[in-house]
Amino acid sequence: MSHSALPLPFPASSLLDPTRAALFLDFDGTLVAITDRPDLVRVSPHLRDLLTWLLEGAGGALAIVTGRDIADVDSYLAPLRLPIAGIHGMVRRRADGHLDETPSDDAAIATIDARLQPFVSGADGLLLERKTASIALHYRARPDLEQASRDAMEEALGGVDSVTLLRGKMVLEAKAGTAHKGQAVQAYMNEAPFAGRLPFFAGDDRTDEDAFDTVNACGGISVKIGTGPTMAQYRIDRQTDFIDWLDSLRGA
Image (cartoon, rainbow, N blue to C red; front, side, top):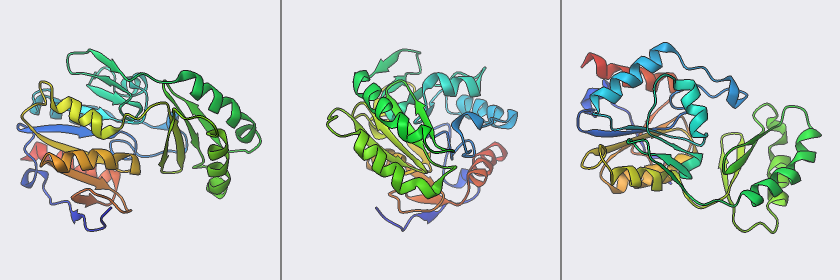
């Protein structure tokens, strides 16, 4: 991965034309601030209004590509209902509402869940989040337990072959399949209303690098929010700065 991402130019209209773009946006750390617990995030009326405006400006070619469950994101964005790729691409709702699901080994996730329960229950501040096709161990409230969490997850994965381990910001996630965000973006790009448009992807975490790679290969625009090595072409420091950047399109 490269450290040479360029500063994101302002205003956004100098780089991005939503009438010609296919917009793909991560959720946590990109559209909303990361919180100590996934259920504590807040979506402002301003953000809903901005996403509604972007959706219309892009002719419907706007999708959320996230590690969360689709229903979870829907609950935060209601009444807005967007195309969403959830669980890092394991489940994908198309613009027409059709749901594509990658087969997953639910028994493997249940096994890992059971193996991690004693570790999590024995330490305050850890959170085990069960999703549709994955399980995530959050240690944001206990950064001192990062190595112990890594060790516990590695041990829990022992003998389980059908699971992919994702390492994110203060979270370790075992996903029951090999689908990733880049594949989700590519699938959208093969469908209306995304097809034939310039792909744009913004994300903040290591789990977004597959999408950056896909978008770069398509000649699109990739944006990393925050620090750390990345394959993204551009970088902006903070999540709130990125929202301001998107919002500048409305003044174009």
